[in-house]
Amino acid sequence: MALSASARKVQEALQAYGLTCHVLELSETARSAREAARAIGCRVEQIVKSLVFRSQQTHRPILVVASGGNRVNEQTLSALVAEPIEKADAVFVRQQTGFAIGGVPPVGHAQRLATFIDEDLLQYDQIWAAAGTPHAVFPLSPADLQRLTQGQVVSIT
Image (cartoon, rainbow, N blue to C red; front, side, top):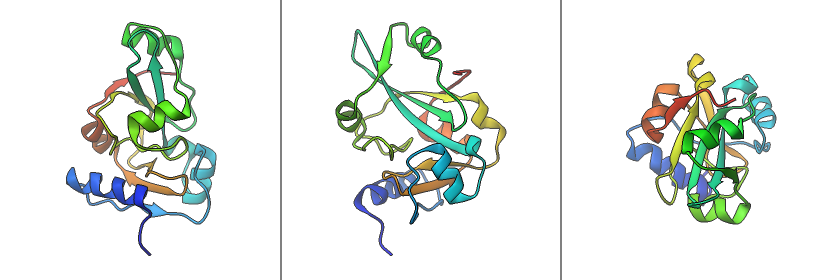
């Protein structure tokens, strides 16, 4: 079966980076980390949550890729970007990434985003990320996540 347009966009981005992993479109929704883990059959901590924040002064998009079981400490994130941050709304997320909330992948965005990677993801051999829709995911290693995003590994919880 052919991939949806958004999932195909992610697959093409992965191929452009030289990754051979394949985007999977699931029959069940993977909108939340718990739903994704249940649909894939992995631990919720192996799910990569791609969360977009907005800096309040410069209005820059900031991507945090966090382990599915963790909550982002917004004060820590504010300190890392040296200005107050806020959760981005759906319109801002779509404008900055090209994807809707619930399917934001860590790659294939409309522009390169300042990215922070939750250090807890590094303990797994394989992790799973959203691939452009609430039904699409792809597997990768933490090393590939770092290479793809050029993100800074931090303690973000």
